[in-house]
Image (cartoon, rainbow, N blue to C red; front, side, top):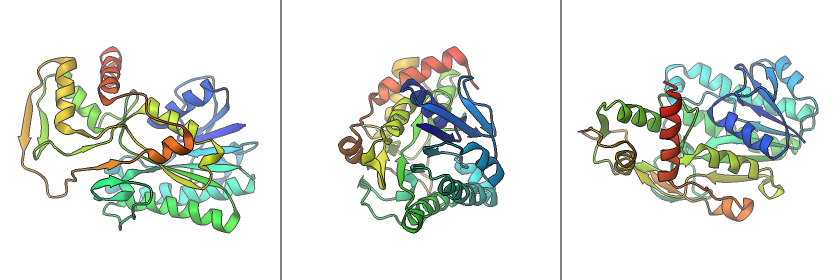
Length: 298
């Protein structure tokens, strides 16, 4: 099996590359940026240039498609780029995969597609109309992949990630910001009562969930990949205090657009893939803080 990872030089993609190599797969990275490691084939390319994709897809059996505008702030500030990369780029990947008779496309999607649905969320939960340009582009990606299978019989797997954290994450991601401020003793800003939260997932667990999705059981399935527990912002602060010491906190009024969060069910991933996250939030956060203190990435 030759596995191509679009966006394989990014935060999540680089960890998927690590796990695939650990399992002995032949791995190829398609990205504008150089991969995190040297022992992997790199095709420097742009999702909007079909000629770049045609070079990278030769002999490929499976594709992890992570190449995208993943920063919601970039999506909002440059919606045209977001739509081009996430939607047209995905179309280009599908057309190229079809031409090379790829066995399956594994799409990186997001639990953002559930919108502001509260309570327990499963893969059967209806997807509401999007309330963000980023969400709209991810729903469009999912629809493209699903309809492509109906038209051309190209199998897919859609993985809906909850909020990842861990080594190599962007500096503006929530956990990264909190850790940096906690280390430098800057006040952490919390809007509202701090009881909003997410099923944060440590990036190594997320990567292992992706590798598990190579199972034939995942063919033509939508699967949530999330942490094992719902963690509130208040809990994040308390865990940081245990690791770092006293952390100053500033509470501000709740913002109108804020979302309390949903509990993301991972029962389907457990049953179909035999996958379950190994790290509690406390364990994952401690590992990330250790990484941050050692590497000071930002």
